[in-house]
Image (cartoon, rainbow, N blue to C red; front, side):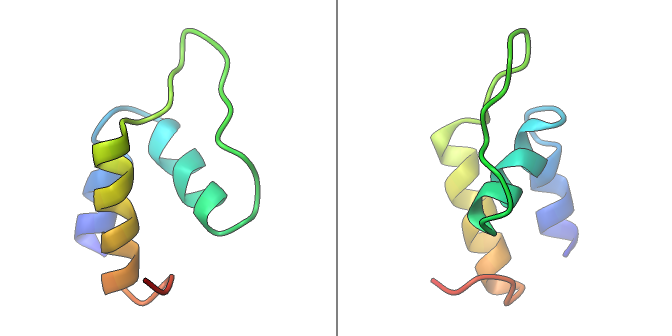
Length: 58
């Protein structure tokens, strides 16, 4: 879970948290400026880290 936690805050808060909530189907990842979504690369790393932690399936 350390990898997941590190990735949650890799590009600032709340981008990583919102992405995980979207993956889990809890809410969307829409944010208002000046906040922005995390990059696609970080989102992919976060998804794979969640899969490794058995939170989601690949």
